Length: 100
Image (cartoon, rainbow, N blue to C red; front, side, top):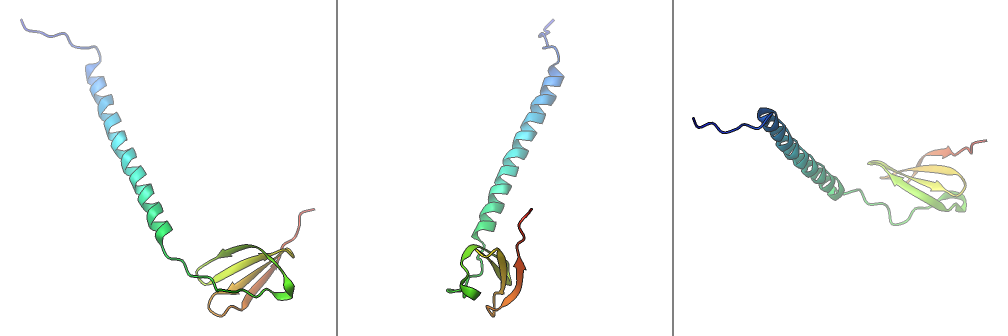
């Protein structure tokens, strides 16, 4: 009789080994997908800002953010000025209120 001793729980170990292999492949695919998405997103061209932005009343800019059709400047006078990207005119003014 040629019987080799079987490890206890051998079918369970094969199943766990297969699960670990599948998980590894899925994780590698996920990391590659996230990396590719970051590269694509960061390489996308953004609209250039104007060379000069004139702020009313001698205000100084403390922060800047932009959207596709606008850009916003936060001033040292606690005000947000939203400009139209094409015309450069102020679309909206938002006063920043300080918390009590």
